[in-house]
Length: 348
Image 1 (cartoon, rainbow, N blue to C red):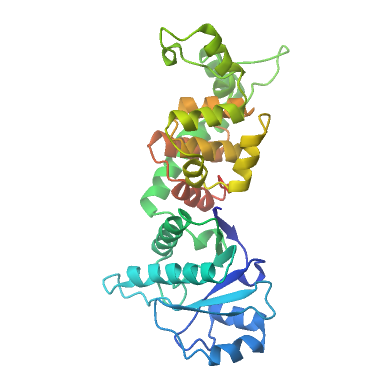
Image 2: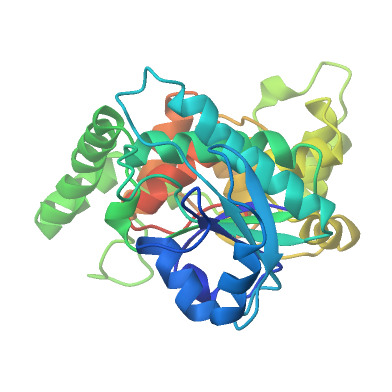
């Protein structure tokens, strides 16, 4: 099951367990801690009094009481002291111990806040990186669904350098296309062979340079001299599902390795595998392209199999292009950037 970033109030998450960023006493406080206690009602505080507190980096579990969640997992994050006092290890332990407790209590889903990023002062971008790295490692051997819950877009930021690099990449590829006069765009699209019109004077298709081919191209170099025309035609005529399964075999991956790396639910992958005519969402196609580490040309071919294309009229598409062109195929880092730019996430 995937790691999902959501913008929500954690007390409203309808899952098996939510995680409380608690104080050592476990007797409530401000921020997320206070909100969870208020929403759960007095029964939660009464049970917490029987637990004898909790050490930093450890976790304890209680009932959910009036919350939608069945359980509350209480964990105590570190106070940020500049990063040289074991803060990262303690924060990582918070996530790992909480996940262990969730698994021991047969939880199929668990929701985390960004632990220690409130009054404890842990930098949000660094705290998010610790959370994702720890959860990603856990999900290699688990089918649990894990949510990271934030309130707003400013609660989660990529590093300032990466944010600036992506913003510049968007500006270079997005602004020009939307600010050029119609005649100038028409001239450039004609030069690129991308102008398509069914009637005189029709407006150009946005991003037509990316969409000028209806069918995906299959490079001749892909086939050996022994390959027959029939084999080449089979690849052209194959469905998205068939193409995906072929690519998995060509990459020497197992199905599980692929759908986990794509941050795709196992049940969704089973549907795709069993239905040769399955029509995926664009975000699903891109997630698999990332998991398979396809280059831009191969990614466009896979998208075309499902009836999609990459376009410079879409910030989402430009961000995907940025990561693939930079050889970064980490789906969680891509989703971190997409979330920070308020775009849809891939996989899930």
